[in-house]
Length: 273
Image (cartoon, rainbow, N blue to C red; front, side):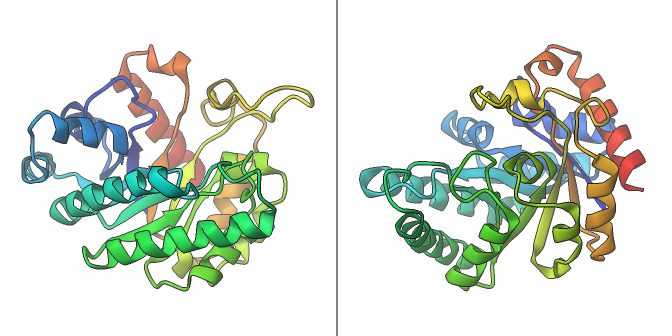
């Protein structure tokens, strides 16, 4: 188990500070938020400098989260490809093995089959970019998107057929999507699990909107997910890789972020041990 700090848990923070924070609060790795990495580079800092920071604090970069809108078409997807190239080059330098891919609901005007096929073709292109940089990708299914279940995610892996594409097991997204159970996770081959997002939360109200920060603003044990059952499901596969403590919570972003990092780590280790 690689105990990893998630940059969404410490949203109002830059990457240099997060690397130090991860070390001081007992983590082995860090899952960077892509916007923070891009902001760092845009200010003239380099991937090599970020690697020096990681080495200085003895922290592994485990994932960059995420290349988003991978389902989009036309000029928007061209922008996604450019971001993919930048993040893949950066990941190679900082020795980050995985970048996350997120398909949202940008093709809902199409049939599921058409949207699925276009999304997979886009992911193929991104995977091929990553291949040249020794980067793998973890697909995250999104609770409110057309591709929202573990089964649909596995269908993407089968259709794309690239050896650098796997899944992240995000407890909240899979649970809130409504079509995945811990038993489904327990049946997985651990080789296709590239990471775990340890988190809790609530379900969307029957007539309400998907307001993700409000639904996910809970430490483990405060929401409605049987977090222990999801942990046990992952562990039963034999997976022993990256566990990332994800807390998407505006309330907790106003805490002392060192306290957030410590508490998120404590709970993850307690539940997953």
